[in-house]
Image 1 (spheres, rainbow, N blue to C red):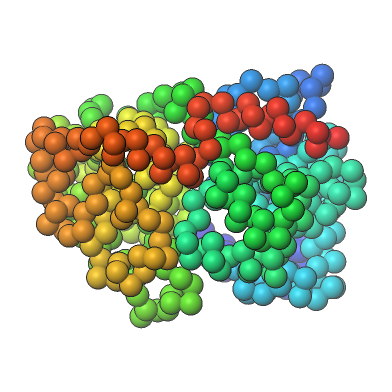
Image 2: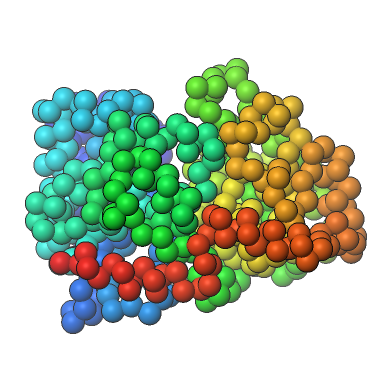
Length: 423
């Protein structure tokens, strides 16, 4: 696989363009599309968005939903843009007009092949500041097809709120027709990023509907026997550290992360009556390394973006750091241990999601406390997770600050409001 990638990188530009165009159009031609011709069709561009899409599919809707894999379909665009543009460190519009023009035609070929196969009436995307989606949105506008963003990043850290709004406004400004967000907190973020208030609607977190609609047992296939689950949500070594601080020998969470992984493996060895899952972030770079290091009969490392809700719903205990999963676990009132003992934590605490101050969870501010709390729980003592009614009420307020009305009807609210954008 790596050899093929290296060969493709060495192809002359004209050959590379033809290669990726053929690949993209073949992907479109091979899509398995089954739609009701009496209904209008919404085209959803997937970007590690599986749970939100699943929630939309389960909601009652008058529309056909057709899903395409955005990164896969548009990966040929990498030959037209600089690394700084792709990483949102330079203005998208700063790309030379000739290069953008070629990618515009590449995107037009994809658009025309798609709309020929399935006449779609609206584009839904997780974001419009992805470098690979902006020409596609512009072509849709030319053809009278609008685009709405169904935001998937509803828990931006304080650092992101301070830094990303200006960066988005300057480098890749909002260009869609509307955006649907999780909370009033997110409405303010997008307003600060330059989006008009009339173009923002608060509906809640779409994938939270899955907690009310579906309970799957897909995780059981990884284990010889179904047992109670313990899940650790892993992360990148530099997750949520301000980008300006990230360097080859700069600060990272590497030591705390390694200690957490090692201790989960220790727990798995000591407690064969449980199954343990280490859930890597969908884009986590060390997934294969972790899988080779930590595999046991009752311990598995998995990636992807479709299993988090099942893990949260079925797990007896969740271990996590900086992830939306912490808020989802709090919403369900389940036991969660937040890891916060890294030596760099005090330095960056004000830049992180404030889980170290969250009510109704256990904050492990040392490896020793982490081990003690987990060992007591696995031995049948859940006393660390017993909270007063006042603390439980405060936990609910914390959740509602990030998730507007998580009542199992978020996707219904989306479909009720999106109709005015459907051509």
